[in-house]
Image (cartoon, rainbow, N blue to C red; front, side, top):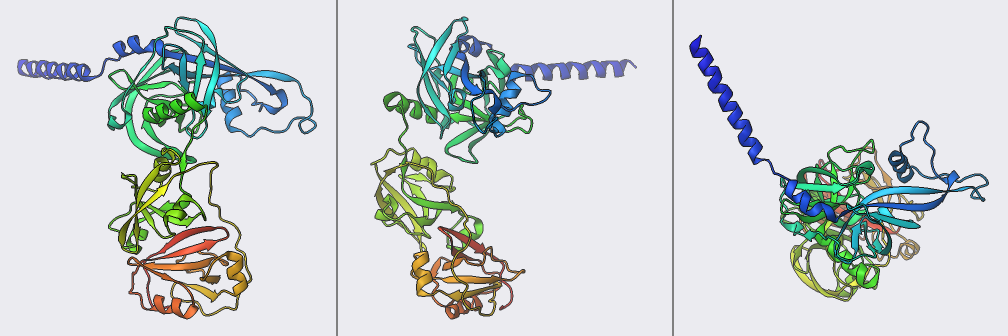
Length: 477
């Protein structure tokens, strides 16, 4: 019995020692908060709105939750389809942080968007009016200013040096609770989000909720490494997926906003898509990487530099393009009129091209339109289960192509992701590019391919061009 008691005491002692050791390894955020908390501010905005245009949610009275519904539920026209209605004031809450002692503050663009009045509350309880110096919706960053001096300001760190698994801390005003501190780790870096082409987001598991938007993300050295911007949520609340704009992106944007009130972004005039493993195999590339050029805008910087559809852009100004989402960020961060070099993979070889970067004026979004053109006479289905026909001179003129074959039918068991009316321009196999001109030529190439071959078709659909990969060919059609 004595032996059991002794062993139990030893085990308990070891367990306590382990727990204490683990507790000592956990970071202490107290000093960081004491030193940097004073630079974080609460932002409230007032906007005159038509009462009928604001969604009414039965049973929901909380202002923050109502604001969530206002942001994500489409507004309906009021009585009389927009006629005069009573007006009220909508208040929204967010966060921000002071970047200079003379009153410049960074926050999210969506926090101050449409505001008629912006109020900034400091930790010393002072409330100041702020004006917008500039806002950039593409990165969701806004620079505002209050009339004050001697304010505490944050220090910035290098977001590129952040490591996945590193501790980070957020300070903000979730649901209006001022100067709330939450902590977590970096979950991932360089995240691409839908409709967000210019920001390589930092993903964290830091608790971020409505009202945290625009607040700073600190590393353990007390340096701002990001601006908390978005959350992934099915309920409007925290679910462990939070996204922050890297500090280097924010600093570049705020500099331009301060100098010019707007952000100038580069563009080269190409429509691109991701390089999949099958596409890489078809193009003879060593692995899936780069951005595949679907089409080149006529007269654009890329066109003048000699970039061609079917090129795969591997690097831009020495920066590797690992995925298609990298290219818009790299090009967008390049100043217009800059002389830049890019490396492209073309027909099994790397080529270097030089171009002068243009300026982005508006977003170009590829869309799938309804196929057009008359239906030519059909021929038997080929090995990939589609029927094609040669184009008439009128069709080529209408589609603005010099060659190609139009798809007239697609068998139900076809592996080709094409539709009737699509125009097939080029076939790529093992890095070899063949322009398609006749039905006989196309079917002959298909018949000569080995079983399980991987091919890629360049497809024109309406006004857009894309690449379709077909893998695992079997039989001979």
